[in-house]
Length: 425
Ligand SMILES: Cc1cc2nc3c(=O)[nH]c(=O)nc-3n(C[C@H](O)[C@H](O)[C@H](O)COP(=O)(O)OP(=O)(O)OC[C@H]3O[C@@H](n4cnc5c(N)ncnc54)[C@H](O)[C@@H]3O)c2cc1C
Image (cartoon, rainbow, N blue to C red; front, side, top):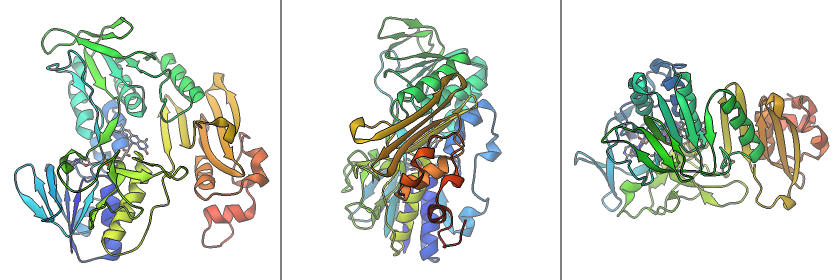
């Protein structure tokens, strides 16, 4: 069997493991347009800020590819897939045949058309090791930075640049930062902490024009008319599934590559996993890319096992976002911003002065979501209760307690969450 995997990040790595668990013999080729072995993408802000060295970026044992007998083709971009001939085409013109294909290409940063952007030298996106290195390489030449977008990636970029001592302004279109992943109080707490550390946060506004002569930037003009002086711009509006190379192929792409619960596309033998795939939401059943690391790992594993002839299926993804800025850890999971709050019971505790906040979202007797700011030590328990659909009625009253933990859980729930073998925890 000839397996080809496009992409070499977390979904690809778990797919390699999944394949090898079932098929120790088949040929595996992995094609990546990046020049690095698999690395911790969430670490790029620490790489930029100097908290992590290049050596620490790769997280696999050095002999991972060799031990799994993977033919690794780095620095190679796939530009087309022909599902009739079962071939992928590389940018250099070569074709590679496959019996089973996995698309694990993640997301591409989205850069909207902004007046004045074309030809400007110091405009960056921030999703790869090389993006961090490029910024680091010209750090001596960066004074003031405008980050367009106050989502997770924008804040991570701001964090890295702040560690380098740069002056930063974040410009966010919504009425608060982190509006997708977190709720209003959590966004406010994070914004407060950022401001306290000298990072300007402007909301309900956007960059209309990048100003400056030739390749130089001297500032940005906002929709409100305000002018923010800067010499560097980071565009962090969001990512889109990296599926452009599938244009003209029979693989269906909607908000992401359309897959079933076995991660197979509608073309037999072609699979997709990770940020590029349209995964099923655990609660709503709606299909959307679930752009988080743990889910990419789960999906890649399922795809690998199924590609090799085994059976596994996706239970649906639980959204989970975490961020630690200026020593304030923040995690949201599940349904954190219910559209119709009347259907839910919402419990909150807050001590904004000390950057502490906890929100618990309950539907019936089930925990369906949580937002934790400041104290996130019990996040694993909350996630387990959500994923395993545990009846929380016996300890409902303790969920908000600052010391809520395993001790509050009845023995059978403890066992179900932490000792699936049946042993008492
Ligand atoms: C700055 C930042 C911080 C993050 N922080 C967190 C966090 O704290 N927690 C969390 O859960 N998630 C976080 N994420 C998201 C997480 O990194 C992603 O969910 C995860 O990396 C997705 O893995 P993947 O394997 O699907 O794809 P990716 O990691 O996106 O990798 C896809 C790979 O495929 C390659 N590729 C794409 N197209 C082609 C092509 N045509 N030919 C060849 N190769 C191709 C890409 O270059 C890339 O190397 C963060 C992301 C970023 C950018």
